[in-house]
Image (cartoon, rainbow, N blue to C red; front, side, top):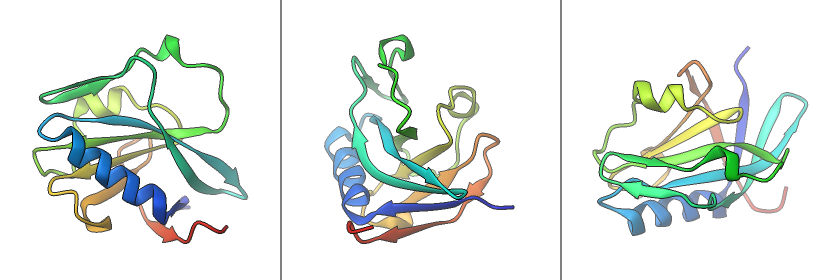
Length: 130
């Protein structure tokens, strides 16, 4: 059974704007939301403490994260333009979902949502009033 993911429109806008601001380096963010009846609802983004952005990588020290059960996953950018996860991406999976946004960071067509196995999950963009 495929998981359902809903992302609030303002979160999508914020993800794309953050990726543009980080370009040509990768950027990384945490996704905050909730899981309800098998559906993941992404409501906001959080900048992880001590995150590092670079050419071809982005990361953060997981031991610096406070205990926060509302974190449902991560999002990071691929300035190269590819929407495919790398082996490193999959080996550093955190949470229930991983979102990748690829250059040119213009719209939801430049975003993919993945599960822990690297499988694509369909997602919908919803208004901010859930």
